[in-house]
Length: 203
Image (cartoon, rainbow, N blue to C red):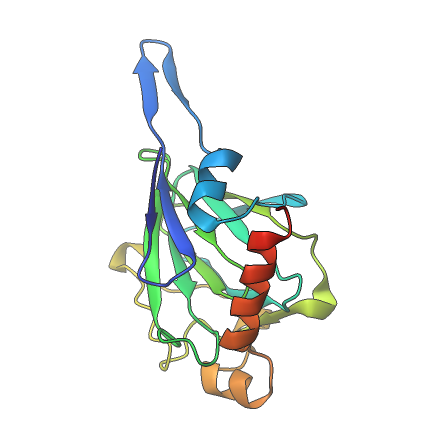
C-alpha cells in the first residue's frame, strides 16, 4: 500500500494494492505496521463502526476531547463518499483548513485522521457504506461537533452529492469560531504533546 500525508498534518491517505482475477479482488485495507511507520506509534484499535447513508447525507464535523481523543481509520466498502479532515487545533499553522479524499469501492482508499482533528463526509451514492476503525470507544460526554455548513470552514460538496442532508445534531452544532469561543476546540500545543506521548509510550 501507499501512504501519503495530506495537506493537513497528521492525516494520511492510504491507497491499497489490489490483486484481481476472474474470481474477484483481494486487498489489504489495513496494516498496523505500515500505519505505525507513517504516524510514529501503534494505532490502538478499540472499536469499529459502520454507517450506511443515502446520497447527500453529510455526517460531521465530529471530534472528541483529547486525551484520549478518537483517531480514525476510514474506508468505504460500498458506494462512494468524499471524506474531509478539518484542522480544528487552535494555534495550528493550518487551523481552519481542510483536505479531502475520495473513498469508494473502486480504488478502495482509506484515510487516517489523528486525534484532535475534525472529521466529516458526504455520501455521493445511495447506500454508501463506510467502515471506521477508531482508537477509543464512543463516549457521548466527550464528543463534539461543528456545523459542516459553516462558511468559515467552507467545505465544498461535489454537485453529484445533491442537496446536503444533515442530522439535527449537526445542524445545531456551533460554527468554528463559536466552538473556539466556547472552549470546545483542542489547543495545538496540547495535541502535539499528546502525539509525542503516543510516539514514546511503547519505547
